Length: 204
Image (tube, rainbow, N blue to C red; front, side):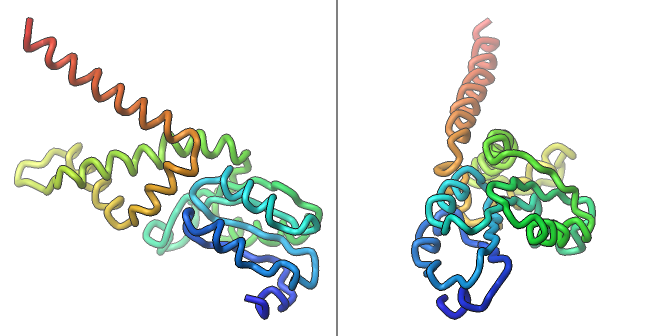
């Protein structure tokens, strides 16, 4: 790690898991940096890495928080049309930052600038909810049948896509996104509401 940070990099891209970020950052010998460096992360939550890195990075280091809204599977045939979310948290060297973002823009990514807070609000309603539903379906052990509807096929795809991700990712999406907790409560309330409507109809 010492040699890496001493190698005069303009950009350091952090690609850790959500749960391991803090330990990885604590292990980094920032005193070995030879120049002001741009640090970027690609975690699926954004307020958490922003706060960890702002606390740990040298004050002269720049920081951009990003979330490529695709992974190895969805991006294997190219990135054209896929979204990269980013926030320029602390940027002094605009040239280096622009060069980093150009890597994604030149591949055809849709570049979406928004705050880390707004990202986490939206991600709780989309990514976290998708993982929650997929995990529930996995617990139910749903499998294809000879009479599947298109709707069920889509549900099965959700279950299968989530099954390829570790539970640590799901845990990180919940623990380190403060908006996910309310979303889980909303899911529980909505499920109970649907259940009660069915039971009420049975008693009519």
